[in-house]
Length: 332
Length: 300
Image (tube, rainbow over the protein chains, first blue to last red):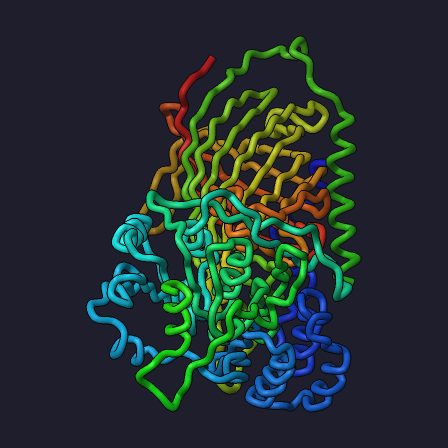
């Protein structure tokens, strides 16, 4: 037995994990990388049915464009084109020389011009954290510009802004061209305009290989936050550039009667994007979940429609028609 | 052939563990010679080379260099050993990316681990004599990995817990130098003093292998429902326990005792594990060169 132990120890010390693990599948082979990505998307992407995408057809269309000798640029081009068929800005391929982007906002007219607001509406804007804020319409309306949910603000900064606006008739929260960011900033911001904990929507996440296999609905609640609340009318300005967390925000507002969406529909981005890596080291991400409204509908991926439609007139750069409609909604 | 070798190796080790278990413990009345029980506090510093692959996010192996610190409390006698160990490791990892003929991509990740280990061993008389001491027993081994890979964006944080009930076998060979020895090295003639020394080999084989791995789509609850929770809850939302996989750990240690009862040792620790989880597996191995100081705290 002692000898057996000795032999065993020598075996273990001279062998290594390579004998025990599956082989290294790192590969620069274009076809292997194509198949890996196609399979990962097939297994986990969340919006095939809503967008009516035949993923098998995509493989049949794009795989023949590659062979074992395809260059890395050719591989990137084919993979990026295939991913763009998902029409999803939460889907990207990242290589050392390029990043693929679909760019939903380019499918619709632009509805936000920062200079128009800065030059013709704001007189003494404060920049409080990531929130630019000022009074409009002779002090009747408070205006808050939030350009990205990736940018932070503290509770005390928000307290200050809402305290400044306490005597206004209402607040306009401008989320146009807000491409999203940290989802935790949604309840942090929206929680200032609600009076009680409220269910505002759900998310479901892929949990099986069939395209329609999802897990249980997970509730999304908004609760009052901070020391200062604002219960008067709130107008949220949106457009096709309002994406991801901004779309989550827009869906959530539907649960509150004091909040009105004005502008164009949001760009979408209701799926949580999760990342991964290809056998050649490039990385990717795509949506693995769906955002549902209170009725269980998943339209948010295609955009949350505004309660009141309005559009920016690019023939008149001194007027922001969407902002004007928001002011009217509060002051009339 | 590699697959066959792998299974033979595992069968051999499991077989060894189960057959030696049937040998039974030595009862206290078997003791015919007084041998003390020593309590030690052990402090270790190791250089380690962790290698892992998480199929949930990447097919690539990540390999790196780091350090590992361990603190242990050991109660040892001729008949029985008990040890409780707390370990912490940290390293920088790089993906083993295939060579590019255009622009080379690379991925950097940070890796940390926390480990708890408790083991009890009993002597097997049939496999022991004056120079050799063989003990078998069992252990509980739990490892918490924390990985960070920013290139994976929303999946930057990689976590898994791997907990095992393991069968253990330890063979200790007394290689003490009983009298001073002078070496003849031409100009130098150093004298090696008599010293108590042990060569020890420890084998741990997972018998019940648990792992706590992400759900199907590797999504964190809090990113879904926008609720900020405490970090542990946030991290493990949607994770699931599985009873599958395997774990092996070996340690070859050279111990030299000092005249005051303390000791120091050098050891080579190798470990490998797979945690298939419910959906996509995790594999990990590490090689470590470890220096340990034994502080004797009690003898009776």
